[in-house]
Image 1 (cartoon, rainbow over the protein chains, first blue to last red):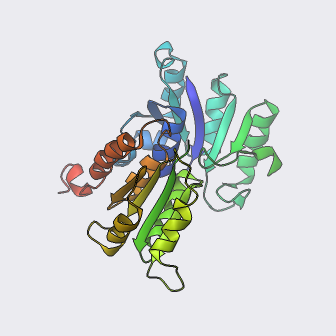
Image 2 (tube, each protein chain N blue to C red):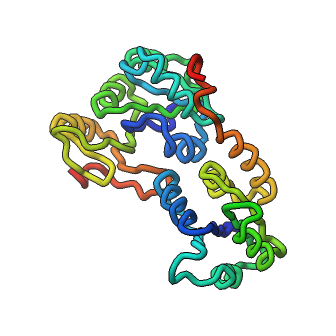
Length: 156
Length: 134
């Protein structure tokens, strides 16, 4: 089952490995990203960053959807990581079990504006966010488990 | 019962590592830092007493010091070693994260022993982990 779907442009790093993984009792991290799935060097660096207590899978978005629909993934306690709103939106459209999305970190990039200290969204992102909110998906902004979650709808 | 923590260092290492902890694991509520020998700072003994005086009878205090054999560790040892106070020298960030996030229900000695073993493994020559980069 999916314990958390998190959008974080750093994918696997300290907050994820040291804070979220133990707090959620996760035993498997899934990095869902088309580019990373094709890049052996980045895959290796993510493997160095992963917590000892969990497996790490790196899959394309399409393979992630197939994996999450597969019965064999159900017993796993999964933390799914994407690095864009678009990828989170794609997963949520295909997987009805995704009822909430955690916005952990999206740094400044061209055309993006700050909605919180750690989250910068483009107009295209905000359009997708509104689609997700209309669908009833809960969107929380929270960097680490001990932070107070803030509803994204109150920030855009 | 929640544990209490002190990080004590020569200079600003203690408050520096606290700012790293806040980024990575968030709130570090039960943590006091002692930046010894910095200007306008009270003595280590005064800072330790402030925490020791508020300790409940069944509450553990874990004190992290920067350097085994250094003056901070020596002063902590002389001043604070007593029942339920655990002194851990030579901390790194990985060690602090693991101990601060540990379940308060697990005995402190057990938590510290396991975290020390893991934190030692976190100190690595990264090149050696990468095929053909050593």
